[in-house]
Length: 119
Image (tube, rainbow, N blue to C red):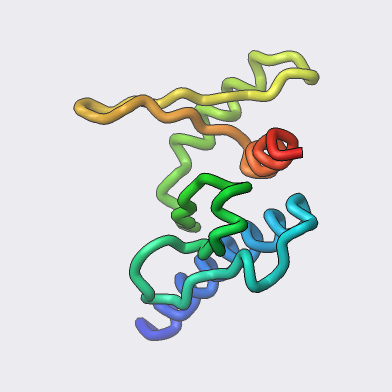
């Protein structure tokens, strides 16, 4: 039983990494599988590995976490969504003591945004 839960957690993480990789590759059409790849499970460092040319286009470091513990953050986004016009992009700004504020936005929107900026 325990092994299968570890396996399913790793599979969830892997699916999210694959989604980020595939989305980046679809947005940055000059890049290919050699430029954007997923870390091997258990490997230290960034979850999405970028080649030097990819790093120039995408100056971000990606950490992917796919778990149920984020419900509160999703509730904040849902509230932002319900308060916004359909044409607006909801943004949640969160802050914890002794930490920088963070902006939470839809991942597809963010990845498209960085794609346009490098147009």
